[in-house]
Image 1 (cartoon, rainbow, N blue to C red):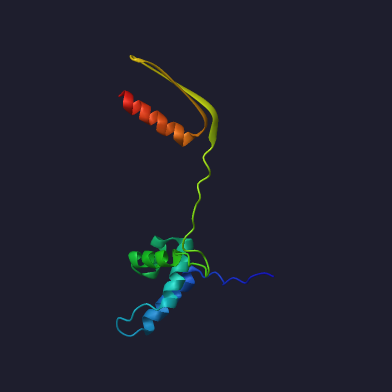
Image 2: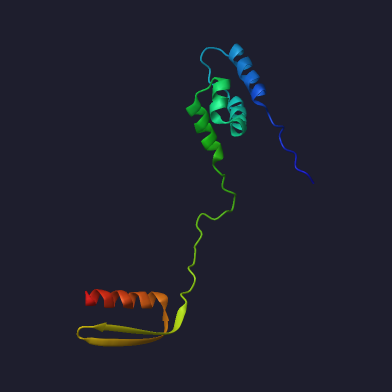
Length: 130
């Protein structure tokens, strides 16, 4: 089953709607929401600068209205929080650390240690030697 899409509106059509509205509006009435929606639709294809210039609307107003329609609405039932579980640390089957200094030599043999254990041990040894 094919979904029907709304017909694509042209810049000229929207420009005509704006001109018609301007001839019948009273005083300083605000631009109706349906005209803004049409302007946003056209600006997505034609660009904000050209659309604002052709429709004689403020660039920043059009930009702001485009930004509010870019927000993705949250689907009902979508989670507000998702826990990301880090993968389990890979253990190193066997590792031998040899450290040599002016006071002697130190040899540490590790079996089944994780990479984070090795990093912690290395950091502690480095700081103690400094």
